[in-house]
Image 1 (cartoon, rainbow, N blue to C red):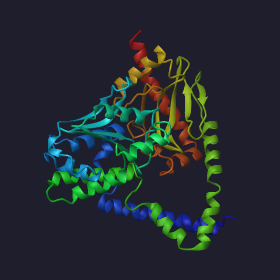
Image 2 (tube, rainbow, N blue to C red; image 1 turned 30 degrees about the vertical axis):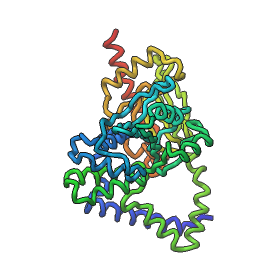
Image 3 (cartoon, one colour; image 1 turned 90 degrees about the vertical axis):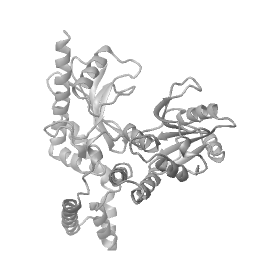
Image 4 (tube, rainbow, N blue to C red; image 1 turned 180 degrees about the vertical axis):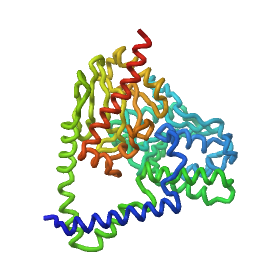
Length: 402
């Protein structure tokens, strides 16, 4: 049984921890970061890493970054000064799949491919296809290596390459598993190097902090650290906390059901998707053929939530859906992306005024904002207002085309 005394005590502790965090942020601006204002998603991080590895890029450090990176991945014998080009999204053609390797670094006698996975899921046979592509380029005069970069240096999923083939690639040194934790350590070393100009070190420091906070979920002065100290300091507090954790799923389910029940869509609109894990809220306006507005998590488990236009069938994108997406690309280009299922989407990032897409809605595990708003009805209202705002843009485009 969870005691009221414990809840009161933890509430006060939480207030104290948040106050300390606010004071620390006021003193050291720990939440302020230049990458908060640019698109630093998977593609953005790939471009940044590629530019750092490019010996001819505007950072002016020539082979310094590439040389230290090759040391990091166990290829210190490769001549960094021989780098001919660095390219993002280089198309493969070994198996005719037309896939694109996130980063390719080409030296005089070596080829390095980097598959960057800060959060996105693998595609079928993706890593296997990249290995085939690099094998095609290998010769007695050209060594090759594929880096699989993830937050914790994880193995590719079985959908991307089977276990036996992955083991063989690792043992033959064709494949290296690299973690973003190692990238942070690499950046930290560069930040401390007097050989790197101050302006570049400031950039690298902000990049290091951004990756730590947004890829590895390690923030400075985190409120959670203060709470953990409190919980682990006393057995009875720990026991009560563990008892409360058993209610977590029930709390989440109750709030998601409430948020769906609280939805009041415009007249004629259909609630076509109800909120629960891995399956977001969807509203369909009457003129939408084969698509609907949707918010949904990219990774599941209430993380990486985005909003946009989702197709009813990825194999059948209707003209109605494509026209709607095209108008949103014109009116809301910042952070916009597209995929097989989503002709237009973007992450919650505070792009729209009136708090229609708060940044805190992006990750429901590191921020309680969405859960609190579900309880008071604000979440459902904001979702409807967000979809209405998007539809105003789509409708204005439709009118101009008539």
